[in-house]
Image 1 (cartoon, rainbow over the protein chains, first blue to last red):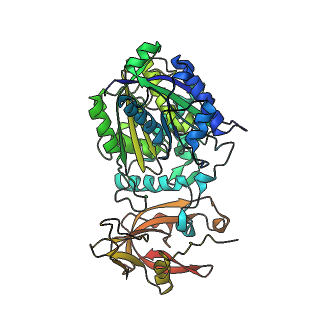
Image 2: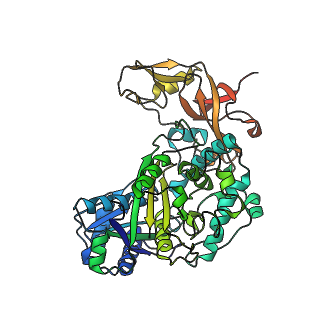
Length: 374
Length: 131
């Protein structure tokens, strides 16, 4: 299936605050823009895969969106995997297209926790709230602590991720946060939940993004101007709540990566630019290790001296990632991967012929990988 | 203010009941697997031939965090406070608080059960084990 399907178009709303707009309206805007980018009429769409909004659960969300889009899809669903669901929607679309179940799919995601409710991120974690165990960030802090205690990276290793992403976001006119930081800024910022500092944590954002997926053949027939081939994809699920996860310093992202690399016929050395899910900085370090860019515990060395910044060996999150472009998790990383392969990114990496995108969700429970190529 | 107490169910009652007796309990299956939190079926063999056993109360620290802001009024006067994952000597893991200065916490640090009551409800906290 390598290269048989393409991302034909990409679209997104403004990122940041979108007061008064619900997630269906945001999704519709992103889908309209993605169809315009692909130069494909809406009537061609016969599948819709949407990640459920994180901040507010709604039953039959996929149908509410299809209704607002005015389409009756041959197939589609709302996906509940946290951040990994963005790439999962694309994977399901590709497999459904290959199986002859549909031809043109919209894959999208919207949320509005910034103007709406961000209570989900501060939620009590079941009966363990009796011990003060609250919030999404605390789960990642538990992972960050375990990683830091095992491998003893300097705090600057986490800071290098934040500094690189913030610099890229500052250069991106669409980014929600366009304020670069220095390493000193990073180190001086207050704890959110220790050992997480303020700038270890992604943004809380309103916004939506969407992509159009179809076969390469259909894209030629429809005259799509800039289709980007999908070379590989993969999944893995760690599943254990972090309380029970036997090893907090590695995840089933390994399996997602190995599956995607094998399908694409490439390895970490072939990747010219990577969009790595950076809900928290520790996820970037662990992803670099689990994907084989460096050995376990080697990420601190890997990210040193600007190696993941623009112009470095492996530029990461070239539009700012979740730390700076938008915290609306995940799909904007795919959009930036597409722009890098097209050669239209604001912070374009020269010769970017293989772009990696990683997603993960929950507290590193779910993992999905997408490899795009020119 | 209302302290966020656990919602006791028939499934979890034996766990909380053991704490009222000053003991930590977990489920143990005929297949040899031992676990928390309470489940109807063993997550290893999916069987239901299991029973509650009291543990020794000995455990070690797996990881921890320190809250500097409170997400609930009950914790406003307690920050900074820690929340830790500990692994019982018998294998099961749970979320808890370790009654020790935060800068003394270490991975693998030995701790022992130190039941404490909140609003009359017995919780499984831990304290450093005597050297």
